[in-house]
Image 1 (cartoon, rainbow, N blue to C red):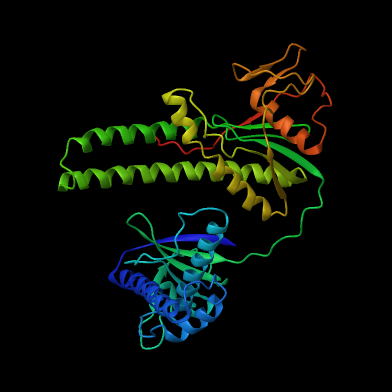
Image 2 (image 1 turned 180 degrees about the vertical axis):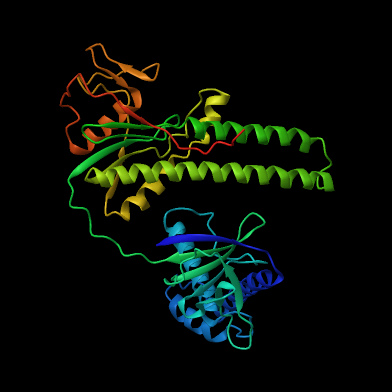
Length: 397
């Protein structure tokens, strides 16, 4: 699946549609209470399918929504109930089934409710809202592709802005027959460092780190001014909105940089005939860290999970497999002699004479660990790593 986001101007019609989806959700809560009262509470999900079919007949059809949009809200409700049971089975005793009433909720249109029109005035999207209800018309950009109909369209409210999310189904490519393996070390200073058996690529993260520093300065600057205001006063609300508007812009820039790095990395893998990407697992790395206030702040803002997610779904579009393995001590083990020590700088130097970039050593050992040859020595003289920088547009003076 691929998603294309389109920002649209706010209107009362959009608010009414998302309110209607919320009212369908609230009706699902009420009908489930009636069903539980009639059939007993301890069904353990065995009657959920029957309940869903019964609920489909009972739901009000007077909402200004397409019938399949109403069904999507209903199925979303039962997916949440299924997720609640799985959490309980895994030992999460605090998990609760869906119980909160909502004022607004995301609305979904399926293929039967989606159509496009093009005339002398431009391209338009038509979203049906069922019989006796006016459809929703949205103006589309000139370059928008109306030949391919999306599988679904979601109306999402995101940071004081309505967006349409076009979700397209793409053909899943055959798995890559290439046998190349690349090891990836995800770092806080360098987001991606890869080694494919011959070339070490270091993706520079200097610009991303500067954005995080700017984000922290914005939070601190606005925090001082907000603390001097009376809580919930007009001035307080004005500063809070401005603060989150600035943070939202910086977050978008950070996300854009991560997308550019991961896209470039996956394209390089495709060009070099890589069949498997091996990533070091960093789960739980933040649990027991205490390197001081500044270092802790950087590590807690480290987006290693986001980078792994982006690499995974982009690699799948090329048929490349992604494996996640434990990366314990991979940056501390010498690839040449196997001795282990923690480097004090960006350069890893061993008593045996081996020296290399510290994150490059991590990528080398992750790849060798996956291939099962971690103990075999490598050639002491290796090709120097290749640095890759972000191409950032600069404002003209």
